[in-house]
Image 1 (cartoon, rainbow, N blue to C red):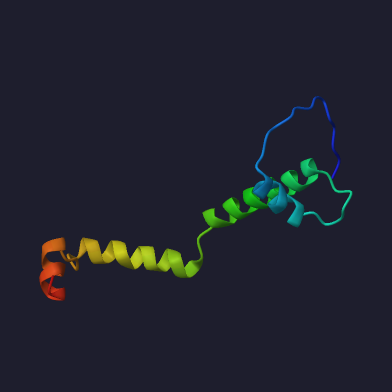
Image 2: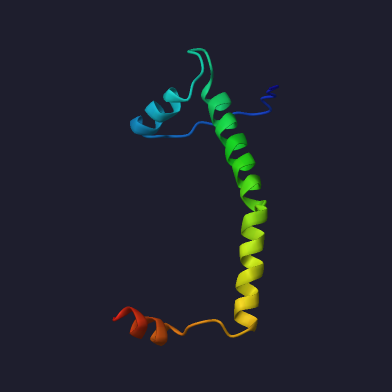
Length: 85
């Protein structure tokens, strides 16, 4: 990773958050900016992977839509009665 520090700022964080950030450091000289950058990159990659649905999920959605079209659904009242609520 290449870092360009066009400007810097100071933020306040709790001691607990600082300890959490410290636990993500791969080495003692790693900066908090590097740690935060890694966490943001991981979060973005994880969010992108959530957007991709598996074939199994897509097939389940397709089946659910067919069930709705063919009336194979229960109202909340029917379901409560069936389950004894």
